Length: 130
Image (cartoon, rainbow, N blue to C red; front, side, top):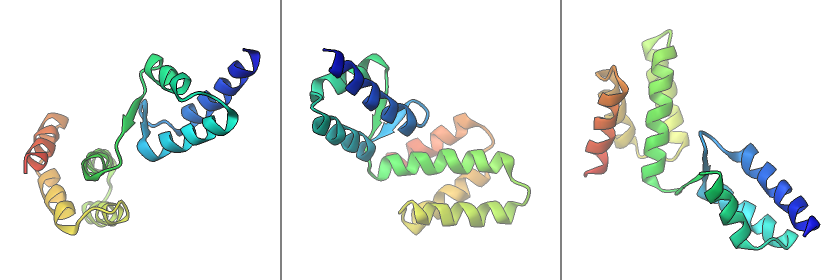
């Protein structure tokens, strides 16, 4: 049992270093699970740790990318010094994330008129309703 605690400490350290906003991306979760299986740690133990720590697994799909892009662009909008640099940088980051150009343009247009987080939630809901 003592070695299982050591293995769980290794895995929990990996999880803690990979988390962003108490969430773990699906690909990171799968990688950590594969490391756990190589260490001889049962999948149920890892899942129980994630459940106890209330860690969310973010699916790696277009929806999660859109939400991450929105949060990043809104955060950067508040910190911007130049509007045009913000648009250019956000557009490049959206392309880097693998989002379609139309989606990026629509979000940046909507974010231009969005001042509050609650308005931004409406932007996301409108996009996901399509």
